[in-house]
Length: 261
Image (tube, rainbow, N blue to C red):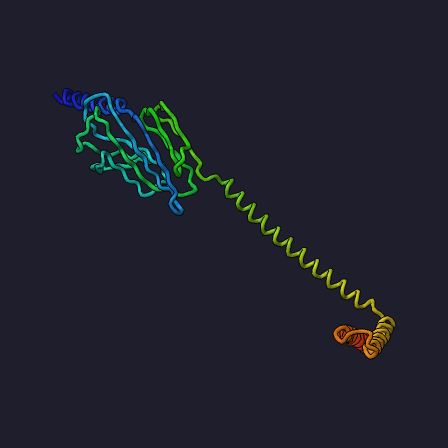
């Protein structure tokens, strides 16, 4: 009698296992749409799966695959929350026996979660999938059809090379700014040096001669004005000009004499 009971228990266990396997094999994903949007420093992922089976047996559990890097995972089956969800690594096994869904029904599964902005997006299908698509910031970036269970793909949404290029351009701009500052400083210094050389090149003899000529011009302008050969306006303009140049020349002479002393 005891052997018969053990035999029955083993048969029931094997039958249940085979039933679960058969149930899982008879369920297919008709359509799998993945929409990813950028929100501040993270990515918001919204997956919508349309699932359908080929028998009239009720769903007991439903497996959903979400990558390990995901945060705030939320799963709805036909807009209902599963009775319980058991996590097994990246697999979320949802108990939906209370929802009364048969495999012949078209069932919609909605999965939402968040990912870090720089994380590589990964997807693995756990059942046969007729079609799958990925839309990132309103642009379709991946499509595939007739995927077998266990198929997977990876998508690098934000490539590290973009960040490297940004750093490269930033450093290049900084170097150009430094180069411009150096060139401006060099040009200013060279201009200042040229002025100093020009001033130093005017000797005491040259300045004295210049002073004598300017004084002579002032006297000549005075004579021309008295003789009514030039107008009052011309006289005042020439007198002011030569007088200013004479004053500057005398100052330069004083500077040279003070340096000599």
